[in-house]
Length: 515
Image 1 (cartoon, rainbow, N blue to C red):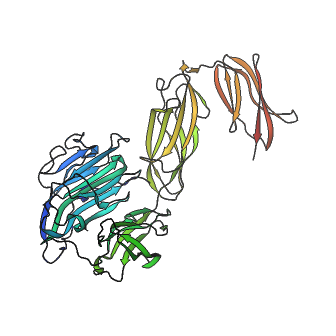
Image 2 (image 1 turned 90 degrees about the vertical axis):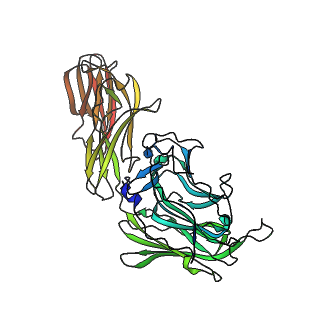
Image 3 (image 1 turned 60 degrees about the horizontal axis):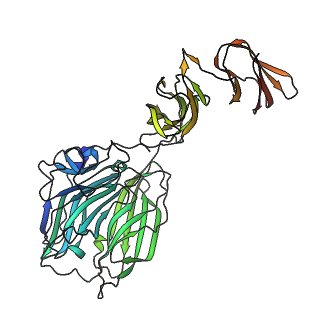
C-alpha cells in the first residue's frame, strides 16, 4: 500500500481541555516544550540519547531519525522517518528530568501524542523509572506496531510512582526509523493528590488502550483485535505472590453506515494479572474495503468500584488498496544483450482502485547482489488498467562486458505493492553498433526464433512439421554479423522443427505450439 503523507501541521494541533484526575489534583510536573531547542540542547533537565550516547544527526535535522524539534504553533518533540539510510537500526530515547513525587498519591501522567506507523517493525514505548533512570521496569504505553491517533492519554502510574522521589519518564524507540512515518508527543503533565500513601485496595479494572484496530486497516485483510487492561490490585505479602483477577473482556465492531454490530467476541473469566495486561485472544475480523467502523472494547467485573474507565471506542476506516502487478517483461526479450537497450514491462492494476503509482526498474549484479542501475516513473492507473512502462536507456559503460545481471520490475514506493517480474541476462559490449558474437547459435522462445552469426553468411531458416514437410520459410538470403530475431506466425497446434542452414553451421530447434 502506498505510503500516505500526513501534514506536519496536524502535529501541533490544540486538544480539548484535560479532565481533572480528581476533585483536587495537584500538578507535580509539567513540560510544554516551548522556546527553541535542538537534539544537542533539549529543554532543561531533559536528555536525548541515540544508542546510549549523543545524537549523531545535525542539530535540527529531525528527519535524520533522532528525537528533534518541530515548530508550528508550539514546540513538539518528533521522531521522523529516516530517509538517508534504510538499514539504520538504533535506539533513540527522550528522557525527562527527575520528578519528585514524594508526598503524593494517585499519581497520573498525561501527555499528548500521535504515532503513525509504516511497517517492518519498530518498538515504540513510553517507559517509567522510580530510581532516577537506573532501571526502567514500568511500561506506560506500547504502540505495538500500530498507528495511534492524535490524542491526550491519561495513565495511572500510582502503583509505582506514589511517594517516589526519583520518577523519570522516557519515550524510547528501537529499530529502523525508516519503518515509521512519525512519532511525536507534547504537553506532559504529572498530577497527584497530596498526602501520599498506598493505592486503594478496591478492584478498579481499567481499559487503558486499544492496540488493534489501528485508525486505518487494509480492506479484505484479517486482523486480531487487541487491547490493554490494567489491574490495580497489588500482590499481598509475601511480595512474590501474584494477584490474578478473572474478568470479562469483550470487543464489538459496528458498521457506521448501517449502525449494526458486525462483529462480537467476549472472553469470559479472562485472567488479568497485577499491572498491565495485553488481551489479544479475540478471533480475527476482516473489514470490508471502503467502510468506516467503530470498535468498542470493555472489561467487566462484579466488584469493580469504578465503571467509568471500563471501556474505550475507536473509529477506523478500511482502505481500498491499489495493487499493481508487473506481469510481462517486454525488453529485454532474451537472456543475452548486446549493446544499449531500453528496459520495458507491462504493469496491471488488479484491485479495481484508481491511483498514481511509482513504477520501478532495477538492475543488480547477480554475482555480488549489488544495485548498479535503476529508473523510476509514475503512472495514473484507472481500476483494472494496463500500462507498458518504457524506462530510460541503459547506456554503454553502465554494465560490464560478459557479466550476468538481474533485471527487476515492480510497482510501489518503499516496497512492492504487487507481483515482481525479474530475469537474469548476460550483457555484452557492442562495437560500432554491431554486436560482438563469437559463435553461431539458434534457439526458440515465446513464439520467436533467435539466431546469432559471428560472420556474414547466407542462411536458410525453415519450419518443418513432424512428417518432414516444409510449412514456412522464416528467413533466406545474406545476413550480417550479429543477433537476429524473427517471429513464428500462423502455425496451428502441434510439434514443429526450426532448421537453420548456413555454409558454416547447421542446427535444429524443436518448438511446440499450443493454441
